Picture 1: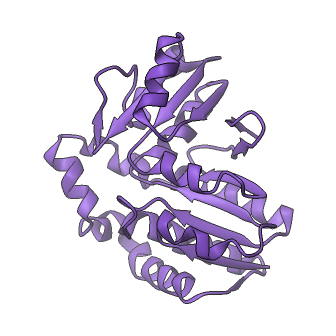
Picture 2: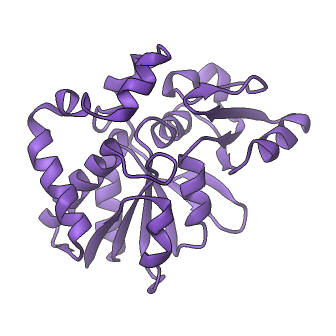
Length: 237
């Protein structure tokens, strides 16, 4: 089996010649981390939507909505894009509609994948185990920032590459080699490495840096969020 890393949703169409793969969508700061937190805390499902208009339509129908654009919570939303928003008392047994600047756009881009799962540092080990159990090639789809490369999602890609290499996978692209190289440099102090990223500055400028350490902490969530193409919902395995 092979693992490759796609640096942004804009590049994803070039990775789809063979559709029999697992796509791991990742948006470390903060969409996929928040989705993992919501499901861990008992949410029935996540309904990802790409546009603000879709989220508003769901809100008008009585759904709880998490919505963010350019790191800020949308004024009509019940939640923003922090994992700390999705507490058990607020989300247990609830269906949560979710839209973000980058993460839900990446899900939309890959929603016809054979298997689409949601990855974060918070569930990285169980993601690696799931991929290995399925015995399929893997694409890490980095949500990036407005279709551009970012450091934090690529670091996750490198960390997952490293784990899957230990399980017998091989690297199939230069992008995966670059991601692995970044991870090997960063691993000893990920928080210090991530301080060079653009997104840290965005979070700090909006006083939203409180979730950074949580977003970089491994294995706080022991579940695999998986997207169902028929229902268009993400539920926990």
